[in-house]
Image (tube, rainbow, N blue to C red; front, side, top):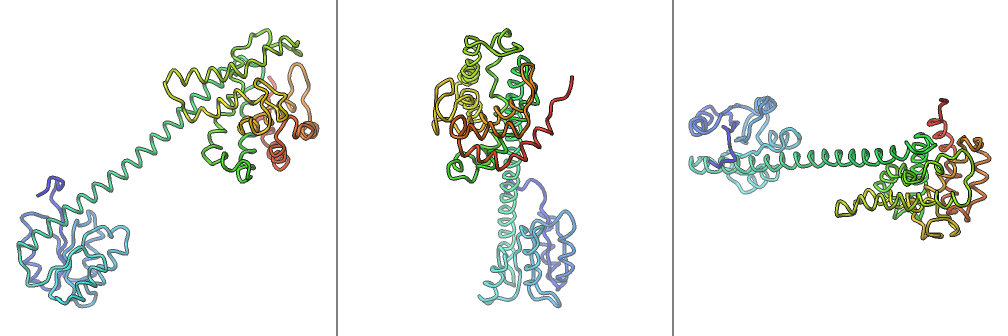
Length: 367
């Protein structure tokens, strides 16, 4: 027998004639575990018991429920449909064989039987079933393993982004709630824009998922800004502001160098780089660090720009009071087609209730 059959297989023999059952038991018992049933209902009862048979030898002409009906019921049940059925019958017409095979039987043997042929066909179909089971189990295992590794990879991505964002947070005078709010704002905008003709190609479900993860990285470059400037409790001088502006390139370069150390670009860091470098660009080209304008600004950075500005406006800082949503909305609208992509502003107006809800959910807590 094939080495794939690593244990004794079970064969169920179904026939209403006792002599036929005895013949098949005598023929096969040395090689297989044998079960017998003398009618259709009994056969279905035995098949339902675990462990299920590996193969069924099935007579057709039986009183009450014939073999065709037994086969039909076996193939209709997901739990038994993969058990190979071989019809073993005195009905030798081509039409009978054709009908039996059409019901899902794997073979058709006519009586009187030839013992070597029965043994060979039983062995062959058991080997085929074992191979099929192995491949199905292997496929299920691989699917499970791929899913597990995908979850691990996504968890690793989350840890990397969270660790880097948290590093930036330790040096900034803004709180971690700012990071959480802005990532939720960005996802809300992305979901609103995903069916828009200008954005549909970019904002796929996977892209939106990565955007949500990447948003907290927008200010990672602030780790490179001197404390005297980063933590200054007041407005910056023009010279200080020039230094502060470098946080965009510092963040981008830090992520890019991390990729270079691995020898390859990581797709999940694409939006991190875009957002870190370009979230201070403005639609009219007056932003920094590259002075990009219009569609030259990455979509991710355009959404981050609005999210970041909105949150800065409604948040209290040591150098300014918090602004109401209404006043912040007015300034966002004023910046339409100047600071912000007009369609991103329109999306914001469509989901402003969700922005308010996010702000309330992750509001700052008094020290």
